[in-house]
Length: 231
Image (cartoon, rainbow, N blue to C red; front, top):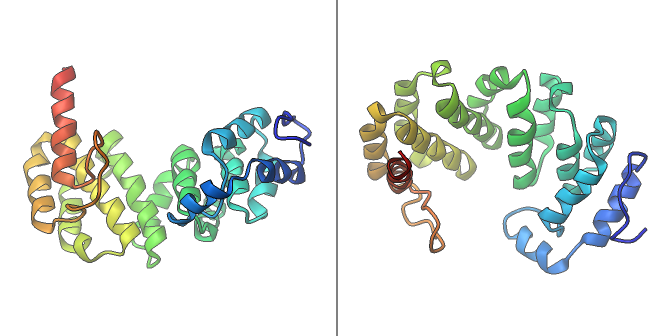
């Protein structure tokens, strides 16, 4: 099999692993490993593999079981989100080691699951900071799209009390939730900005030119500015 071989509907997990091995780039692995992601496959090429495979839920389960990070990313892309029950999704999140796998699992699978809200509520108070971070990532999405499901003032209270001392992955998602409240809810915007300014979480985070800072007051201000420019 060569790197240009097209993946077909009868491809096995071994075929996919072989294809991913051919796409492995040592330089990219070195870059990814600095972020905790132990694979060296260009994500555009990885998505191309998944596109060739199309939706194959049984294959996705086999790929996930390999415990290979690149294979798990493909698994997420070819799985059927609604075919997982809540217990399976909870176990998958707890098994996931790589940040990119956790991120894709939440965004591409859990957010499309009928169990999303139950998992969000369960994960928010989990003692594992990575699991709790997933709960906050889901909450940030709810704040923007279904705010009737949450108590915005209670969220602001909790963020104000806990975000500064939270573990890094949890702190990041709480900060995202704070920004989403400020961006999407004008009546809470001043308080969200004030909390961000007082706590100073991610204030000095290195941000490339032409990118928006993750520091909540700056993030809120920029997104509100853009909304006004397109209104």
